[in-house]
Image (tube, rainbow, N blue to C red; front, side):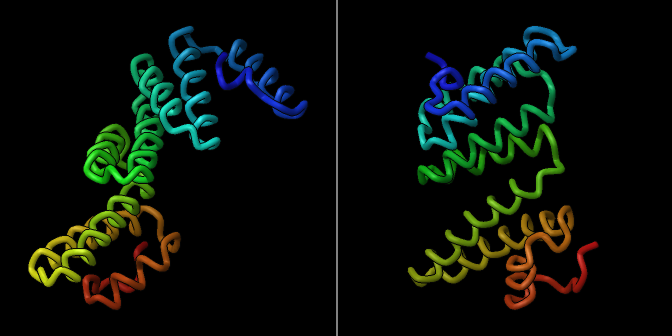
Length: 173
């Protein structure tokens, strides 16, 4: 049974029925509608913590979806799952794929920076300062892009950029 039909309460069931009706009436082709239903089911599974089911639905959505914007959202959600599961290399690759579809995704850049910064701290703790500096610089590069796309949205990142000396820009807009 699809996740959207497996709701426990009246409000969720009602919302799902309404959403299904709206999707059926949308002036888009059947393929795009099916892609959306897979995406919606993937998002529902992801929110419920069922990452395997979410990834299956997202993969099916990607097979059908033609819109670069919608594909980028699906890829971003997949990358979040990979990141949560500790598969940082796959997360980085998937975030990049999302950015290739839609470069206006500051959250992808922010999360990529989190991975690089974490790896930098790990290298630093292991006494590998040159490697740490390279990773911190990569974090700074993607975070600078993120902050430029979303000024004021990532104040902690702006502070990190300033306090580490990796930014000489005071205002990002």
